[in-house]
Length: 455
Image (cartoon, rainbow, N blue to C red; front, side, top):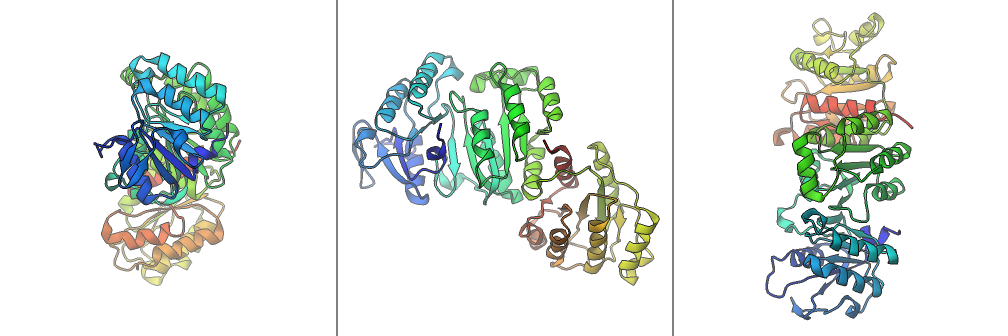
């Protein structure tokens, strides 16, 4: 199947427009695309009419241009007939927003829709989904524009069975500065499934990291997915629900999926070097880290801090996540000591964590970071930057980023995320250095690189 028309359409038809209810999902989709996105959009309602001065077409075949993508938002019983009309009109593909299919026991309707599509080689997303967010082309989410939080355009593709989980992660991505190439809610995934999406994104030049929220698979499908993810040249991150008996029941009632044995699936992911996020916080941190660094590390972390307490917490957290914080050699410690300013030379600690104390200035951070970026004793640098330290300036993030870019060793920063410290955060983010708002989050980022082993 050719999926390009789904994700980068030039023309869009929204089927199910209401002439009396502007809050109808189809109207919300039409309005946001007509005003904000690049695809040319056409409204469709079987009674025709006028909407905001534009003609409403009774049938998709009445539209005077070839339609790349149809968004179907009508009652479930009417969807198969609408899909047949789309196929006959030569539409490139569809997003079926409508619910009321297998998730409510109407598998007959869903099977009929799939049969029509397969016979015509007609790709569709859904049903029972939000569909596709593809900046700057289009947005099929039936959520008002003023209520959505949109991440910047970036290199992470996000695929989710749950529309709510998808939108929630988009909000978290925006908050953490993680850029998005494409977001797809696949709902019941009656035709296009995770394997199809994985294949598409593996060759998509705008995507560098592929992330999935999964609820379940059909028989043997999970194994095929893991093997395909293992072969994928890009990092693949998985967040799985249905880990408990209650979660399994919730998955089944949500999208009619079979959750399967989670412990087995998790073990297989690990064996095949597919990165599993255990929760939503890991998911965001992993996406941010792997969108900046796509090569694995052994997990030997060097820590630079101005607070002994922060350093101790970071060491404990690294240990909990299977990362090591090796004590630096005597020669290494001596070299760092000689590189820092006289005011901290006698009071700093150099063993790892490197505690520069509250008297540190920018040049002390730079000297320590340069050494750790050069040494073979560690393979990842963790900077615990406390912006209220009196001797540092707002240029520090950018200066440390340049060291990372010159030396090539991964650097991760922790900076408290409040507006007052935004300039420090931007110094890293504008140079594609991942920034966490907690020590735990920073360690998660290092853990993602350790888990992301080559095929």
